[in-house]
Structure formats: structure tokens, C-alpha cells
Length: 383
Ligand SMILES: Cc1ncc(COP(=O)(O)O)c(C=O)c1O
Image (tube, rainbow, N blue to C red; front, side, top):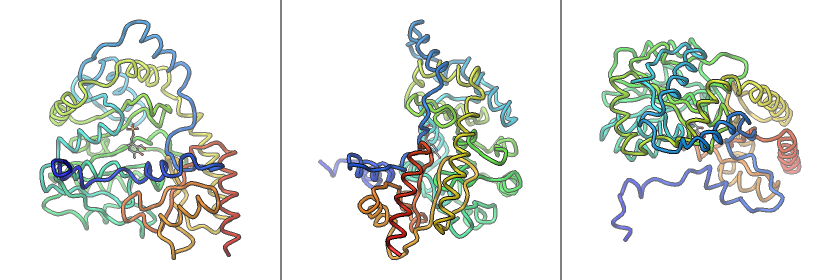
């Protein structure tokens, strides 16, 4: 029956991150530094709000765009944090995770043959959706630019078919973010062109030595902002994402969302409401802990002579493989077999990630220490 399967679906593959994680899952005495999800529990008051929602029988469909109280809280959250102005009635959509927000945004704006510019290496959640739309991903190689996705690089890839530019910052897998000046240059380049920006700002609350600026503040009418609770409030499993777009665009995105999921899960929405109101600063203590881990891991990697850029945000290091005779997949496999540490091969983040590996520091200090000890031991023994 394989010939009956949609060709575009056949052509896409399972994410390389999951593939590697699944492959090594179950291996004995393994330190895994693979998964990009917070290791903190969801804040207690948020869990209590969800329990209350169940007791209150808040278990039916909500408005397609999400409960209005949550949309108001989301609009107020991005106003307070990033000075963005969105009308909760018509410009905010609550989605099933940022993943669904990415899907419905692309499906709304892309036509067959549209080109989408994105950095490479990049989070693997965009390319398959772009391809499912019959559109074409166009990567700008940021690996030779200290992973900075600049206006200059973007401009080199703009063509008459460019419909959208993906700006994921702080970035998964590199941790690099964009400064206000860089955003201003990108906004100046794109302003007035028939091009949308898809700004994936899911890590906006996890930024360490600088302030996060949303490009929507500079280019509201052409921007779709993707955010959510997964990373900021340690709520990956609750599946709540947030999409902000100007009303004339949001009304079309809402149709795709409606026929896709009807609405985000109602109980999760009440947890999210609590998170974005009473828990508006819940990310702060987590951010402080991540910052400590980042500094620790960075020091260790530098001492190992690793070629690495210190991440501005998120919880990843994207590191050059010291032995360039191996592909990133071979290197990651060797680390599993010889050192007992699982990392993600850079090739999981497009071909531009070849030659690198990603480690996540969303793990306890103890786990990080042991993982790094093992990597160091393996590399020292090899020399
Ligand atoms: C850059 C980026 N965007 C989106 C997502 C998906 O987020 P969610 O779990 O809310 O769907 C992730 C998850 O790792 C991510 O790293």
C-alpha cells in the first residue's frame, strides 16, 4: 500500500533528535544530554489551577482561538515583557504547543513553490512543514558567521519567490540570539516587501546576559510571533503555544487552527492562564539556574579546547567535533559506545549542522558534570 501514501509525507523523515534519543534509550549507564526540555517540574500553583479547572468541569471545548481570559493574559504578558500590542479578540491564538503554531502559520501563508529562508543549522520543526506545503526551504549558512543570522545573509537569499523568513531566536540548536541592532537591520530589509517573518521566540524568557527584543515591535504588520509555555514555565507536556499576528492575517490562521485541533486543551488553558498571570515571573529562578549551568559547561568546554560559541539563551551548546574524520552521526555514536554519553549529532539540524554536536544543559549539575567528565576522559584517552 506504500504507493498510496502521499509523496510529500513519504519524503519527510522523523526528527533526527528523536531518532538518536530512541536509538540510545535503554542503553545501560548512559548519561543523556540530548533532550531540550526543562528538567524542572511545572510550578505548583499552575498544577493546582489545572486541578481546579477539572473540579470546576472546565472540560469542554473553548473558543477556537482559546479562552478569552487566556488570550487577554497572553496579550498582557507580551505587552509587559516585550512591549507588543495585540488585540486579544482578533490577534491572539492559543495553539497546541508552539509546534502547531508553526504548522498553521506556514499552511496559511505558503503556496506551492513559495520560498522560505531559514538559518542553517536550525531546529528541525520547520523544514518538513514547509515541504508538506509544497514550498521550498532555502537555508542561509550561518555556521561560518558564528551562528549569527544577519540581514546581509538573509538578503543574499531573497528571491522573487521568497514568502517568509524564519527567525528563531534564541536559537535551538546554537543558543545564539539576535541583538536589537541586528533586528533593526532585518526589519529595515524586509519592511514593505511582500515577505512575512515567522519569529519563533519560544525561548524568549530564557535569555541570560541581554534583553530579548521581539521583531514584532519593529515590524508588526509582517510578523507572526510564535511563543508558548513549554520552555518558560516547564510545561512541554501541557501543549500550550501562543501565536500573535495582525488581525487580517490571524483571521486566516484561525481557520486552519479550527479545522486542525478545534481548540487547545481546556484544562491546559487554565494552567496557562495561571502561569501567565500569577506566574508571570516563574521563569526567573529557572533562568538563574540555567545561567549557572551554562557558565559551568562553557568553562569545562573551553578547558577541553572545544570550539564553541557561548549561548545567549535557550539551553544548548553547539560544539565543533574535535575529530573531523568522523561525521556527526559517527561521533555521536562513538560517544555513546566509548564514553557512555548521548549527544545529538549536528546533522539533525540540517546539513549545515554537519561537523557539530549539540548538548542540552536542561539537566542537573550532577548529570552535566558526569557527562562532561566522560566526554573529557574519552577525548583525553584518544589524544
Ligand atoms: C525553536 C523551537 N520551536 C518550537 C518548539 C516546539 O515547542 P512546543 O513543545 O511548544 O511545541 C521547540 C521545541 O523544542 C523549539 O526548540
